[in-house]
Structures are given as structure tokens and as C-alpha cells.
Length: 76
Image: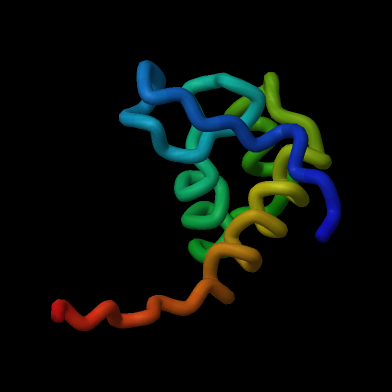
């Protein structure tokens, strides 16, 4: 897996949700905007501190998380 050095998690920021570079914008927000048909350019216009690579890494992180599998644990 490629490095996701722009995705940060801090319990003191946004409830510990994955954010972009320690800023108050979550991966969820970025992915949601893309799902709502916003372009990268529109997202960067809304959040001028973002860079194209931030959006790319948000998508990589979301893809990685969506591939996780839950394994049920049975109590003895």
C-alpha cells in the first residue's frame, strides 16, 4: 500500500476521525463531495488550503478502509 502521509487522526480533532493534514476537514467530507459530483477544482475552491494530493490520498484511504472485513468473534 502506498503511504498515506496526509491522513491524520487525532482524538482532539474532529472526534478522532481521519482528517487531511491535521486540519478540520475529514476524509468523509472529501469523499462525500466527490460522490456528490463536485470536481477536484471545486473542492479546492471551497477549501483553498487543500492540494490535489490531499484528495487523492483521501480516496486511497477510503478505498483501503472499504476493503476491511469484520470477523465475528464468538464468546466462549
